[in-house]
Amino acid sequence: MPNRLTGVWAAALTPLNEDLSVDLGAMVAHYRWLLANGCDGVAALGTTGEANSFTVAERHKVIEAVADAGLGDDAVMIGTGCCAFPDTVELTLAALAAGYHNILMLPPFYYKGVSADGLFATYATIIDRVGDDRLKVYVYDFPAMTGLEIDADLLARLHAAYPATVVGVKDSSGRWPDMEATCRRIPGFGTFAGTEQYLLPVVQAGGAGCISATANVTAPFCAEVWRAHRGGSGEAEALQERLSDLRLMLQRYPAVPSLKAIMAHHTGRDAWRRVRPPMLPLDQAAEARLLTEVTTAGLNLPEAA
Amino acid sequence: MPNRLTGVWAAALTPLNEDLSVDLGAMVAHYRWLLANGCDGVAALGTTGEANSFTVAERHKVIEAVADAGLGDDAVMIGTGCCAFPDTVELTLAALAAGYHNILMLPPFYYKGVSADGLFATYATIIDRVGDDRLKVYVYDFPAMTGLEIDADLLARLHAAYPATVVGVKDSSGRWPDMEATCRRIPGFGTFAGTEQYLLPVVQAGGAGCISATANVTAPFCAEVWRAHRGGSGEAEALQERLSDLRLMLQRYPAVPSLKAIMAHHTGRDAWRRVRPPMLPLDQAAEARLLTEVTTAGLNLPEAA
Image (cartoon, rainbow over all chains, first blue to last red; front, side, top):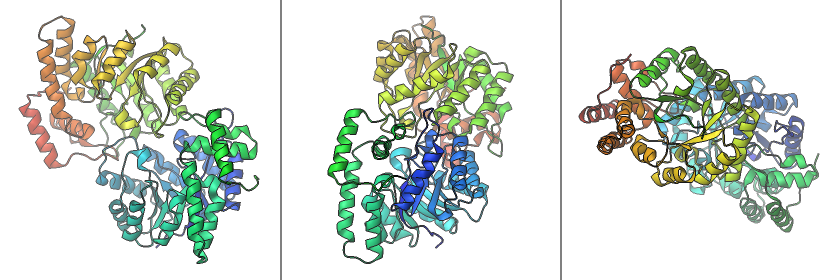
């Protein structure tokens, strides 16, 4: 099984400059801080990273900044899935050229009512046009955003057709039975839960770990669960319970603005609050409620870089 | 009221070459055929045109081809709405530079749960960055594809903030009460129904007309309704009833592949069957069923160019 990636991954936030361009320096610093504080890897240019609000040219710059920073191939996944398949091909080739082989790939997400055959054909078209044996695709299944369903049958079919290339999935369906079905159906597949609420269950079922938005702030707590599991410690279940409580509290707020508000508070940098349209920053009342809940929950973050 | 556009508009199909690039020559010929056979205008690069499956560079080429063909400003709307607002700004500027001022603008459609304030801010950001008084925005509301709701309140708010710029809507909700609410709420606004099923009702309610996928093949029948309405003929209701029957028959099939199959059959050009991933052509059995229904319904098309 060619999946090499496991553990705790953050779907990393993207800090923005005043003109709403990416603050590449702060972005790399945030990635390093995550990797130093509980993350086995970061997913760049995912949903939480507002990837779909950036142009292809802007995403090229993110890939270049990650490469220039020398972050390791197995510590970064690059999100490349766009609505137009030639854009996905172009960004995937750019990631490979920059030395990053692990690609988190959304299906084209504008059109709905697309069949499993249509989704299979799309991934096949992209993989064939990229034409690079080093490519490792992690299918990105996020039905609440895409309106599309990528089930264990389709994943098994893609993996059978491209066994060395389609090696995993980020399952952001929020549905544990779906994640469990994939773990059971494709042993050794890199099944990542899209929430740390299922970190311990998914690795116990044979999956790889989690890739989560809220891991931008819960990574140290995720890492405790992961270490306890790897060490065979009896504490893993209790640590998971505390982690799930944190996640469930955080997910009552809109993900990107609330996680950015926490980072702004933690770093003292207002710049962290910026989001791209169509999102808006949290209003002051919501931010105050969130920060109170964060403090009450004992979500203390390690010092910023 | 600065809306100048009315009548029957087709959300035009985009014919493709064998490598899935746009067949620009066949595209322009199709636009001309529509304009000669019942359409007051064509919407280029809409949902039916598979716009979101094309890159920004490919969409530039479509805009250039329309301009090179000398199609009139008030006979073409250009779709420019992308997920990343700088792409929408870029394509809108390109349309204006090419002489086309009527823009059909989707909101950014990846992120869900976006507030009305967030959608307002997005349109405001784009309009402000474009910064051109000649711009006429037709808001493109297609909740089944975008997962977002753009209601009469939000349209009224946008129109109040930009009275000379936000001048209409393509309401593809399929919900007649929504269309009627917009006509009532903003008199003189360019409210286009996204289906010819509501062509007569929407113009009777003070709206502008329809912009429809199926008008690629029903345009001559739409035009009969429109002419009867304009001429005050008592036949308008009966003609609308026949048109609605055609529409309801056609909309039981997946829009783009089925409309392309009809065009392939009509023109004798297999090339018309090509669609971009994630869509697939109709299978042979479905195509045969569709073509039988089309014949039975008396949907005879005028000779191809």
